[in-house]
Image (cartoon, rainbow, N blue to C red; front, side, top):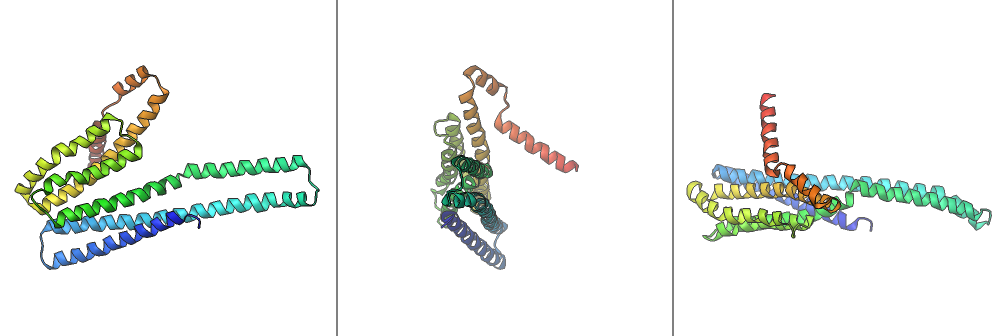
Length: 275
């Protein structure tokens, strides 16, 4: 069955998204009706948004899959039945010369190559594969977070590091950065900061606020590290083609990644305020 794995993953992600949406709506209604604090409502809203993104992403991938399948079928029909079938009929009646068959087969090969190039340019297969793994990691992350939320103990602030390491391990594996010192340095940030800050925030603001901060900062950490990992991956590719002196000079002249991202974020806020 064509695209069977991709379709199965789309169905699973859609069902998980619908389940998260339903659970967040029910929890939001219960928290609102029982008069719970604002932190609980914000947690419900975060899960509601996560369910919307998950469901919408599954539908978007399904639409892209249908489009690619239609294009592939049309191209295949044009290549095989329109161009090659007359040639095969002539070969069957021994009325075509070998050179003509060779010419038609060369045209067919070029068309097939262009089809493969089109698939490679769309990057759909890679997108679906990455999307599949992201769905699985997101599911593990949400389950771990809910487990810590419902069974909070004195040791939970030290276990919060696991939420950050889940995303770090996934992104590092995707970009093959286990040999890079920068990747291990990024992993050390939550290991050193999260436990101590969790204890401080718990004593000052309470557990519900702490859980909301952990959830939002862990997702922000994953997003920022994803951007940084892409740059590290591109930088590794460039270093293979350049000599060490040129690579060192480019790295020296290139601004710090976090400084550039912070500057860009501040500039966007200023531009939005002026508009």
